[in-house]
Length: 115
Length: 112
Image (cartoon, each protein chain N blue to C red):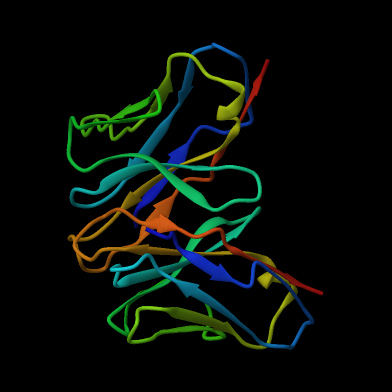
């Protein structure tokens, strides 16, 4: 079945450091890929998405490129802030659009950014 | 637009009891999905409803059930609660034919 593997955390960085969180996936067909972020005590917020190969999703300085050849969707940010401290989840959606749809998540990566 | 709302936000129940959680989707969204989040298993898909019909179901026992009403609001029910059911239950809504899901804040269920 479908699966998502993301780098184990926790990840601790200093403010303004470069961030990479690796994510690889296994899926049949052509899934859509997502990064969600969860702040303490809250639900998930969609950070960015990509729906086909070579698409780049971007939002709030974060970027990720859908690489079909390496089945990867790594999250990057050039300069992190303390406010980026959260848990980040990589996810994919399976099945044809509008049917059999569900999200499969990675285990999550806890990011802590120190001032 | 108002976001996805879930009630209650926190619940404490005793083993053997049952519980009902409620989710109101974003206006215009017809698909509602439920997920369970635990430290050990992470985020796991429970089920998805569209137009009052369950379209997809995850690998959970029959004690977990749900339904959707004509106004797209959804409820999930867990009967005969077990300690392992303690979790954050997240509801998400989406427009059909789109892959983007929007999550509510969750209901934190504690079973003692």
